[in-house]
Length: 349
Ligand SMILES: NC(=O)c1ccc[n+]([C@@H]2O[C@H](COP(=O)([O-])OP(=O)(O)OC[C@H]3O[C@@H](n4cnc5c(N)ncnc54)[C@H](O)[C@@H]3O)[C@@H](O)[C@H]2O)c1
Ligand SMILES: O=C(O)C[C@H](O)C(=O)O
Image (cartoon, rainbow, N blue to C red; front, side, top):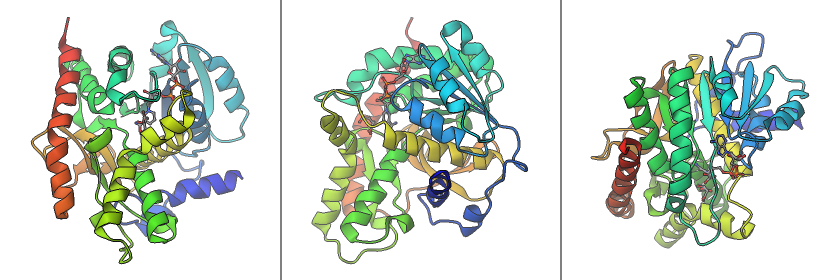
């Protein structure tokens, strides 16, 4: 079971760009891997718990720090019994946040409220913006050099909030702040493979833009392997399903939250890519929402090469179909206003 989860994590490392056989072969054993501390903030939640489990299974992690406002002692005690490399520590309440963060190489943030049916991600802004702001203030103080993997929604705004908090604290490094959009890639791969009837393990689809509705733009024209059996209508339907993937789960859960298990998987894939980059593994490429100059917007999701300092290179969009060019035009105003909303919030008061 454990072996198959690890194998699946490894397989999923065939990133949004073409899979690098070298990357797939170069996984570290715990004996050779450097010490790496990963902190999960919101670790007792729907995403946090399975994410804690998946990070405990990752041999690149030596210290796993689980923080929440409640419930982490139990989660940490539970996960700590798994016989894998990392030492696990649970921290609860604001007074323990500093200890939870100190020395972290990566901080993953799934803290905050999830959607209920009928809500947009932006409806979460009023609660989650404050949570993210206070957590990022603590990150700036206790582990200013950590890579930050932002999962809390609305990602289109929470990433700009984090950037502003770090700027104010004098610790901002644009190479180290990531909005986690991996779930969009995971969905695009799954839906494409199903429709094209190709084995999902070998599928790659870049997803660009942001992480809400039409700002999620899968580039199926660049999907590999190429599928000649898909019509223009099929590609439009796949695009819509990817954009509405989160809502599909929210409705199916009928008031009991949003995607947690698939998100934990996606979060674990992205954190693993960050760890590999930090450890010097070459050609680690994932899509992520980062500071960017490939469009006129200051933040944008695209393929990103990860390295020892975080973002090594923000890769361009590549050739787009007419349908995708239109999608790009349409998403820019919404993404712009979500970014501005985040920046304004962070700078008020
Ligand atoms: N980026 C993505 O693709 C993606 C996917 C799914 C969900 N999400 C988002 O992730 C967030 C969490 O979702 P969930 O289903 O795990 O929710 P959840 O309610 O199950 O868990 C959230 C956890 O955050 C904790 N929390 C609240 N305030 C905190 C604080 N100040 N410090 C530390 N922890 C705090 C809560 O106690 C809870 O345990 C939501 O905002 C959701 O929209 C993002
Ligand atoms: O849809 C949501 O609210 C959660 C998340 O952003 C998702 O894409 O599943």
